[in-house]
Length: 293
Image (cartoon, one colour):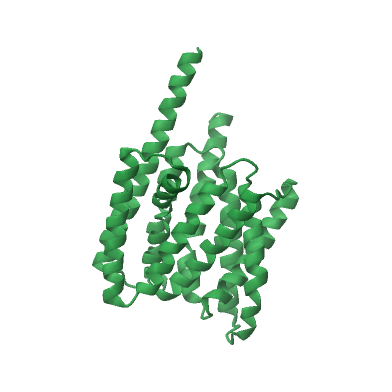
């Protein structure tokens, strides 16, 4: 295997491992018998420590700018609302509704920056909306409505992360570190109100911070540099599928028929949309290269 191919293979593996790590969030949050905010504080503080060590090893300097601070605020919203959603609804609902973020990016770009949506954008938003409606019908029937609302709000915050970490003077890992550190400092004191500090609970909290947050983000930031966009889109689309599977296997949480249908619609439409974007971007680059040649 040639060296460039080896590097690309290693990058794809990093993205895959990152998706696996991210997908463990629902299971570990379910297994920790603490309040959601206490869990989120502890996992963010540990995650910030792991990423901080990575920043020191790689000598990556923190960036302090308006986009970074806004991205950090969005990161706090994402992790906090996702933890709340996992305690109030099923893991499948929480992760899939958070996965609606690209649709909110389309809507926010149209509202805030007057960027006219394309036909594919509108079709994707329509499909995602249909899937979300199914989740909310299920939420009303099963008493999961507050959790589903928290998950959708988490998706909106995730859209903010995507938008604010792609502009000038933005730095994704700085936003991630500062957001996690802030959430950790503010929320970790809530852990002192908990009573269960058994070994299984502490190990699950440590795994959330070191593996599901810190380690996953480091792996993703390394792997995404050399992974083809289509491949990355398909791999990251596995997270909302693996997340409820872990919970079903090791926690015994059942998923309703409406949630399954909603999951297929939301995940399928977002993955197809990402693949379409990647193909469109690749074709545009080829045309540009041909004109230059």
